[in-house]
Length: 201
Image (cartoon, rainbow, N blue to C red; front, side, top):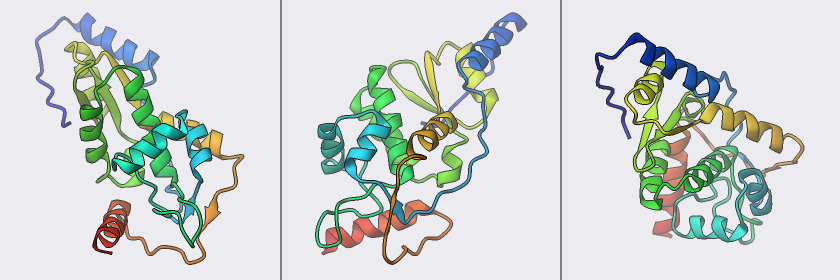
């Protein structure tokens, strides 16, 4: 998913056009966001509504480990499974990629890559696609290079998705775990630790 932007000798007008297109699509924004607590979660129906997916999709993606609930991974004595804000952000991105015709295999690759980014870093990423491959852009220049080179048919600025989710989840009461999870500066490490514990019993 790394962007390799080969600089081409093209007319200055082509670059201006690419910058204008990126601006119109809202792909150049770099959102300043605040990391949300990792011990607050949302039930499946709330995650579905916020991400714009069906419960069947949510269940299938969890069972196939595409996007799993990270606040409370399994239903049981502790209560229902709970999805974090980050989980729902990725669910919404998956839905948008699917809607544009990207294969589930490519989406799995993209999600696997995003899983190792810190939550705040996600807001600075724009995913671009040519309809086949997914590229990660971490600067406005990379977005423009892809658009100029014809590789960027469409894009998803994760910072904008973050703001949309904040708006839709603002009215919903999340559930906080009784004992907050110990988290470090890299939330993906905590998620990976919980997965290992679940697999080893």
